[in-house]
Length: 204
Image 1 (cartoon, rainbow, N blue to C red):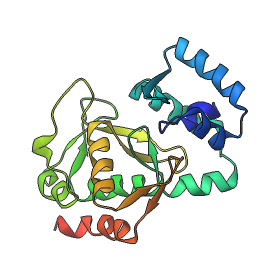
Image 2: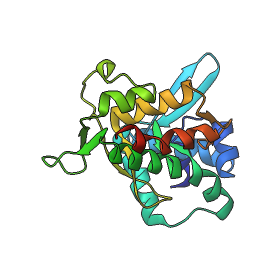
Image 3: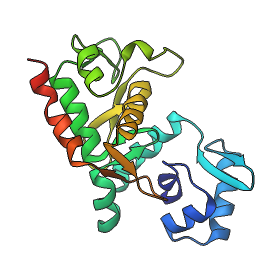
């Protein structure tokens, strides 16, 4: 399970050794089994081989099991708890705060026709635009627009789906968050919290 959790952000074998503390031989063996069962993919770029979860469904399964598995070691939980990537969207306290802010600002709303699914709200264009997201450019596809994803550290929801991925990309592009090298934890700029706190006032 720890290996799958570590793969919530793509990684090489050496990065997985650093993240988990497992021996390289053990990790290689487990990766081979996970690939055989369709849970993990790998991508080669020159001599570099990077592993990642096979798809969003696997990522949701890992996040859900993490909720049931109990807390990670205190130091790891503290780092991941503030902000991290959950597959390709924002999680931790930052992700939950963003979800709550967008709901309060009526930028997103629950879809009563589909359990856990989310639709754009009346203020979506303006509020999401203030975060650097143009909803007109979000192209519908086989992936769901947005859904409630249960956060394993906060035990509350953050935003998954296409919208969640686009928001994460916007936060990274505007310097509101920054990736930690070799980890899925994120460093959060103070203005990111201020931006989220202001969402409610923008809807008035």
